[in-house]
Image 1 (tube, rainbow, N blue to C red):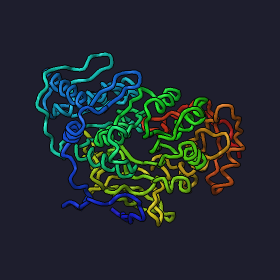
Image 2 (image 1 turned 60 degrees about the horizontal axis):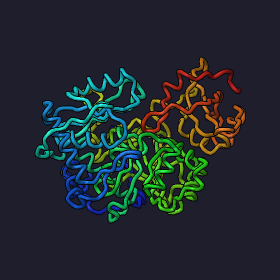
Image 3 (image 1 turned 135 degrees about the horizontal axis):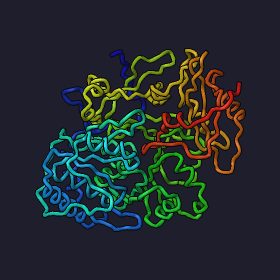
Length: 509
């Protein structure tokens, strides 16, 4: 491989307690051996503390979480599930999701979280591809049985298979080990800069799906490791979110920029107290600097930050911390403490494919040997993202390799256009797409969703981009869309599906 490993720059993260292993990979020392061992430590430390709150539902203490999860494990064993078996978790956000997750691990089985937004054929594919022996299903009671001895997993044992969102063909199952989970949990604690001494006063609002690595790996597990309280919302209803932030005194928020934009524009936002919110992170889509400023203004005591990661990285690779958030809103930040980044085949603009090496990089893809060999090479994850890294160590994602627009031999990075439009007047969302052209091969098109009540004309969009980017990057096609852009569970736009829906009309020039 022709790669250039990038220096860490001035990343303002805690770098203590890190060593290289025999393979040269940075590792946190003294981590729990498994997710089960982590949870058991929290249970022993504060058994009566509140662990889970389901909005509109029940409240569960740590000892109740442990005891009830063990009974689920016993129920699975009574159904013939043995260590190593795969178990599909087809449940919506809620207490039952968490009990099923930990119950499966306590039984020594492998959790297969299923994306609740998948179509029937995708769900069937995931269940069959994983070889799941049992499925937790909505509306059915959780298995219940006599509590067994907890299964004691080793760090490198397979714990879960998270299937990618399938933006290009059928999803692939990312094999996540206990070490991957525990490395990412510590990373989340460090880069978000959680107060480790808050205990049950650390309260996170999970409004993103738990079947996604953000909700499970970077919210649920780190907060439970610290003995905090996980408040779970079934769906991201803005009014309910505001009510929950106030009533549950949640001080950790994680979501996509579009949700925060809706949140602060909601009619009830002005009367909702926000001074208790201490951590607010976002990711999955470009964010306008103006929105960052508004978040800092409306959540005055919160550290805001932009996170970036992948299912294949068990969640986090980089984070842009509070001190850089407004002035570098188009950056995804610095490499996390145990993450090393590299660029492969960088061009004259310094843009190349982003590679990552870290203990949270998953074991490979389930049943996909060829994809594993091409994606995980010599210890490096090939992310498929095109990026550049500046002299400070700040990382900028400029496109997915498969989404780059080739306009007559000129590479046009769609994220660069989307970042420019993130601050355009009246624009709520925008996606840059290739438009086939007989002469140029591809031309630049953008789909724009206006802010409710705003009126946008295509020539104004092109003129706005022309003031900020080179002429060959200015869109020649602009489509105005009333519906929100289609996104996967991680907030990324489903561009292949969007291309099938859009009608471009005549070019602007």
